[in-house]
Length: 92
Image (cartoon, rainbow, N blue to C red; front, side, top):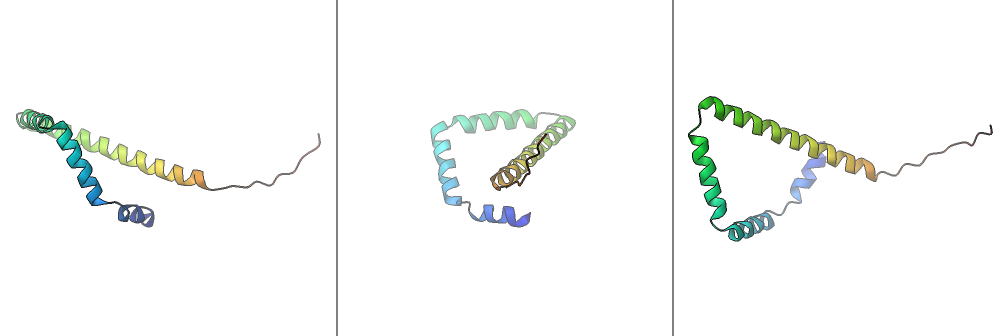
């Protein structure tokens, strides 16, 4: 299983991802920064219990997305395999 993901991570082009992120930030301008600052300020003013609930909720969501991605990749890989069946015809 590790070799399956090891090869995928080696193929990632970090410079391409960085350029894409810079394009998105330049496209959105200061709106993304303002949205982050707004959310960060609202998060900082919450109680510790609410902060912990948000962190746990986001962690569970991230885990569900990762597991769904793994099953998607496994299913995609399994779907590529060719299977040949041999069968006999039965007369009724």
